[in-house]
Amino acid sequence: MKDQFQIIHQSAKEERDYVLEYQNIDVNLRPKINLSGVEIDNISRDRAVAIIIDWVKKKEKFHHVLFLDPIKLMEMREGKSLNRIPKKSSMVLAEAGGMDWAAECTGEKLEETISIISLMMDIIRFSEKQSLTLFFLGSKEKVIERLFFNLIKHFPEIRIVGRHSGYLTKERELMVKEAIRKTGPDIIFLGMDFPDQELWIENNTGYFGKSVVIGTWRTFDILSGNLDKVPDFFQRKELHWLWKIITKPWRLKKVWIAIRFYFHFRWKRMKSKQQASP
Image 1: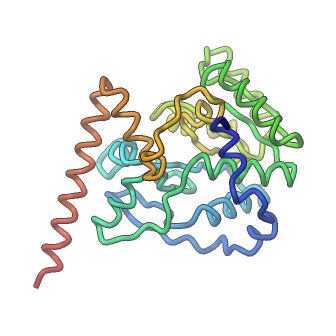
Image 2: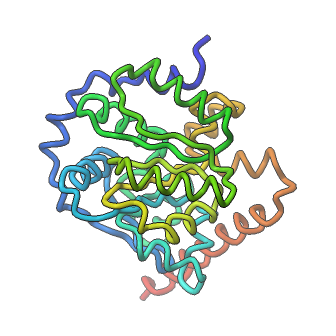
């Protein structure tokens, strides 16, 4: 039986001519929708990757790619202190089931919910072909090392210029920041917990140069095989976030946020129907 990393690696999209396809995508076309005061890029995964690659090629400035699921959306919606994070981000993507339902409740339609892992793998494949440099920061030491060896096994030409666990002392943090500054990677994959990850990015933009920083949360654990496989039903529905709540119910705060998410957008749907009624 194949492990999870191999299944992801051997996707049907692997044989595509990425370079040619991304060159033919209009990176200036970026429609958006607004969910509770958060502007989300309403684009496909291919367009998102093409835009990221365009940023890497132009090397004009630092960019932050932010992924949102229902829990994070509720913590970053209008009126919350973290609402400043999506406003500062270069790209905001809806990454999980439930986000499409929330959009429908407000009379909008998401083109696609985008899996962090799928986007990450597309970028890694392209990076190997185009010799882009990558830096991985996050999770535990054994996880980041296992991820590294998995990647070089499947992508032998990949250029990983740095990797480090996300558990940082003050001394190690300074060392990592200096390593990022000196190597100037094209893309940084950052895997920390929410909202530590977003706050770390916000507080350290001066070290990123002109890199594209993509927040991946616990994706490193999944790709390294360190987490139990999410059941097929929850994978198909893109409800990884809900599975985490069900399997770890002691995280009562997240359970409460999920309930508020449901009633928050049910109320918006009711208001939308009332306004549409003659």
